[in-house]
Length: 84
Image 1 (tube, rainbow, N blue to C red):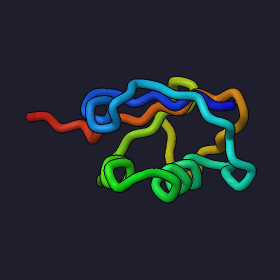
Image 2: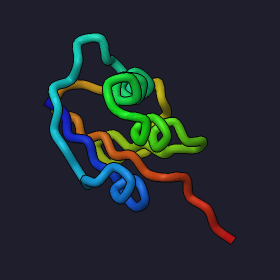
Image 3: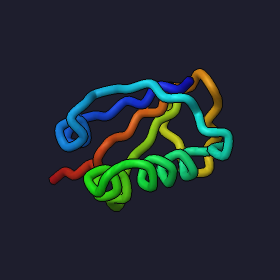
């Protein structure tokens, strides 16, 4: 089981701040997890998680899409950061 956490506008768009799910056998990294969520859920999920510059942390460490995901991990999704 993994924990998914959604921050800021993602939390608002998806209607939840966290959830737990069984890690699918075919998912071994962040990119595959994102692709699984996009394929398995509705268009709002696809629009949200496929946005440019989505930030992801695994166990509170910012990572790239090729970072491994294993049972017990916490995977957090952050919207792109802007500033000025």
